[in-house]
Image (cartoon, helix red, strand yellow):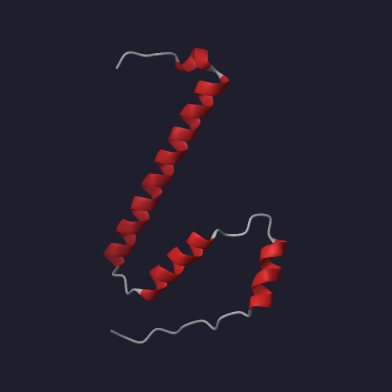
Length: 83
């Protein structure tokens, strides 16, 4: 296990200014996820599996959102189909 180089932390004033300038600041949980991912040593296979899982979840959420949008905006397209 080798030593990893860490980037220096920015002061709170820089972080606050950056948050004010951006249209949508990153939620706190995203920052926590990134910190957790950086604090643990990941193998290439684990990293790939995690990214693949996150991609699949994102696609599932997009499919669900699209389906719901169609159901609300064009209910005649979705209809009650027998399964």
